[in-house]
Length: 317
Image: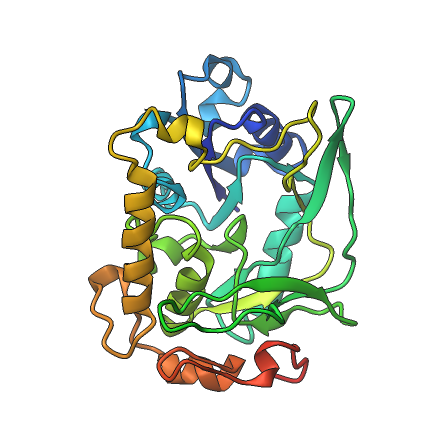
């Protein structure tokens, strides 16, 4: 079965390594197609010269024209060509062997609960030491996403902070919050729930989680995640990732646009998380409601109330 892999890259030195890992670690590399939005100083000619080039759909955008991660992920989704599965990752990702067979099999195993399956959990980390990639698999059980103990609503924002918690379980479990750098689903997910290009960054995961839920999709957290993510490193040699809002990059744009995009995003997110949301194709679905979401996961966006189950995951739900 074919898989489309969406990669929105921003000035990322590891893009080549990510693409190489996608194909080298796949059981069926001929069934993998990668869509890349490369926001960078110049085109990456190494990708066009790679032996995998005929399976990569590549678009270069001057980094100064970028409008943020959600905008870029929306563009990446336009490179999808009706593959059976859709896999969204970040541009600093490594994989275990046979990741493709594992995720397809796991998704199919959940379809008796809901045919609209989204596999998503925070990936394991990898680090860079002396120029070498080292995977650090720390989670062999299910990682659920629970509300951070210090996170709560405030009068100006519906944004909440989540964190991964390992629970004593190996079978997938339904949750209410996804990881945007590790989303595996049927190919029609982002036809039905298109990425909102007017969001900037921080609200990305909450927005997509709730919108997917209201369109009838179920997020499944799972064990033995075959995906590894480079989280920020402070090491001066192996530098942290370049961020869209870095001041050195903002200074090369017009009118401090990152601040503008961020403010637009926050206002838009607050509209979405209300009972009067009217955002067209970027709004709620008609299958389930925000009230249903509150009943399932303990987060009531309309009343701005949080149940204790949102902080400590209830395995029986």
